[in-house]
Length: 386
Image (cartoon, rainbow, N blue to C red):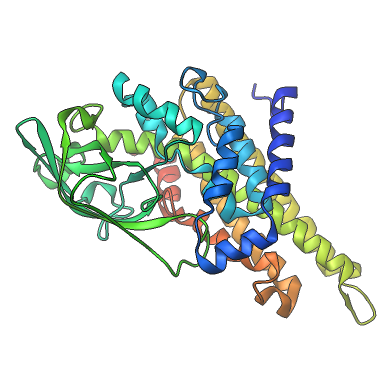
């Protein structure tokens, strides 16, 4: 039976994460990164020094040696303080699970210790302009030329695209029929200083502006044979395995966002007056806060259950991961919507933190699989459809 009570050690991690975020995620820094769409390098370095980003990476590589539950705890606590700064601090290792599970010993020994120490940043490039939810329809190609693979293509919405030292890139290594297209995809480790690699920062995002997002162009980028990650043609399966893991991580992000927004709303309605009395004295607002708090707790329980099952089974449960991700995302968006509504006109001004929470929340319903895809996954499990 799954126990959702944190151990003493997990509580220590939670407290440490909360204290770090409350101290370092200042409103001044949050506004600067949001308005200027600035990547907070110094903050990311501080976070790396304390190992928060690498809490789930094995100790042999310099990580914390914990698991998905501890990883969720850090994400939740960081996101409850500021979602944009949280995602910037915790994604320098974005994609590391694929490297850990399928990379060669040389790849792991060369890169993962650097990721843990903060010396290196990585990213993962799957999405393309015409291949988002349909991840198997990528057009980027990799052609073998002697002892090197030559990559050509364009990737879109790539986290850490302009700040990463290397990126795991999906590419087709063969042409197959439409029904078998997912069997043509392979991962490659591409160092970002290679000739022909170009990353262009995407600006004007609705939210999580502290996180670096880019379009990547690969023009005859050459990498050694040894830069292939795992087996040829298995990239799509690695990707789906990865999403089952990271969807729970996004669910924890959404829970943190919802918690943070609810706190902002509660604090505001206690001090803001209307008709001579605090907003908190109105029964309608009390009922709405109660309803939101209950939904957040339900989302939180589902999220940690999905993480606990992953620990027990040694692998994620794709149905639970999908349930947690879409439900928690929905709760985050709803909570932020009501929290901003309670703030009235002040919530529409970016000097009030709820403004950023409101904009940051929406991404949790989009990346790592849009909520519609999550619902399809759940439905297929129910119906027994592969």
